[in-house]
Image (cartoon, rainbow, N blue to C red; front, side, top):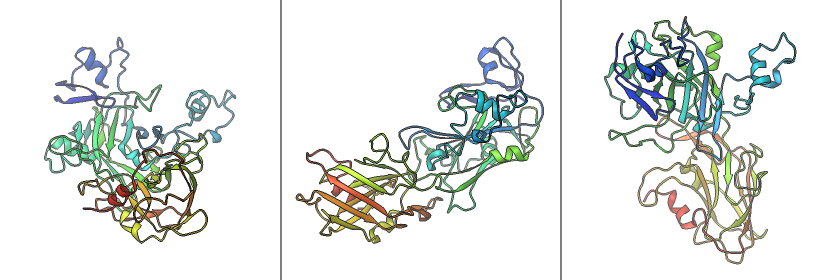
Length: 419
């Protein structure tokens, strides 16, 4: 079979076109084509037998202060036997837990996928997946731009892998990309992905190839997902995936619970910064220092908030332990001047009118348990299945000197409404 296509190396920043799959011509082609044996460059002949799934990786590069990377193939090192014994040293769990510098750092029990891990999901194979039921796989399929394409190769890539969640309210649109290069060994898998692989991604583009991703699109929190890999997928040699039980187990993962990541001005985290998700996952009491009187108290969550239900929440706010203050809840649902949807990840607490009282020193804000809910994916973003289960208590101290707030009270009130 001979074909002309564009190949992506690692993240897709490097590409070359017009290379025949049936030839090993030149150094660059030898490095890209996993089926070509070239011992001068270290490129070995691809493995014999059915194509195999080696691991599933997920990466959230931007929702918090460090990338969250997950590798479903990694074991729990607490379950490892005595790896100093000769009879155990060659066990995979010992090779990882005894010799690997990262050990089980990225295993699901230590680094669970986040709702934003859907930005980069990769099914890593032992050789390049090039065929689906005898049809060539395309290099990309965009869930928005290519939704109505009739290109056989793009459609084959679309049908080669699906994301399944039976308990979720819906699924976000997921694009596909094929990466035929890479290795099952990486000294830094966070920045140098394993390969070859098929990638699922939340990123979509419009007809002008500009980012068209809905800012609310994400995986749902506290949800079990399965990657459904088509049984007809195969390498160059046509040997199809067997779907063996051990490989199938690698294609399952569960996202972390719905939780608060950040409280602006909070002093709860171990490092005394604004990020609180590392301290206690179920933390619901926060001490907010240096709150600006013209700014909304702001919490950042790991999944979109169902903003339509916030206006009905009965919030108690007392100044200096005494008088009640009328407050409201909102979210960053819309842009300032238009009804363009925003991420809905921020929760705002603000006075119903004006700014916080100039003569108040402290506030105690109580938000009822179960009142902050997430959204269901699938396009409509209706009320989801998850909520912050505990009562939220915010102990707020106002700043002695004025500074720019994260969000002004007036802007926070406007952000939850569509003009």
